[in-house]
Length: 135
Ligand SMILES: [Zn+2]
Image 1 (spheres, rainbow, N blue to C red):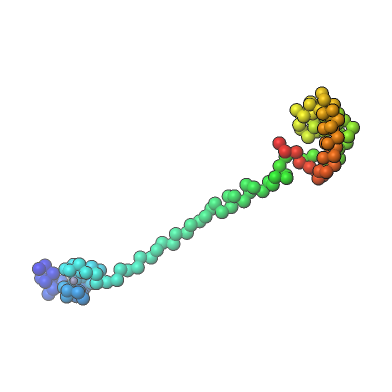
Image 2: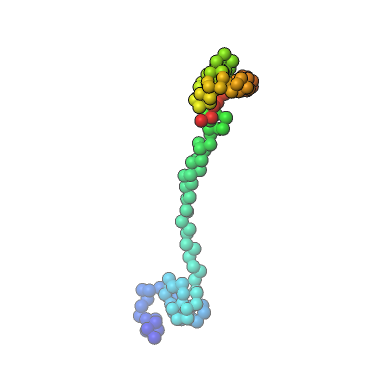
């Protein structure tokens, strides 16, 4: 009833007629105030540009750069070989590689009775220069 009373008086408020029921409704109305039908397309709400700033893209770059073959202490092949060849029975090359436990073992067993000494001489010759002793 109120809307009909305002029909002749309130011209300030822009009105329109519902295309479903014909009721006079405010211009800005999207849903008819009388019948509840949708009379206007919902104004497309601008989706806020969600900029997903992926700051983690570079976090994994440096983690695995140290390859397996470079893990460890670099040792000169020829120093190790000479130590092994001349002082291998004392475990000198094992001490040189930082393997004190094996060095002591070689020291007391004369290079694992010569067998370890012989194998180490060959194995050191087969290594790259420098080679890397794993920690
Ligand atoms: Zn209506």
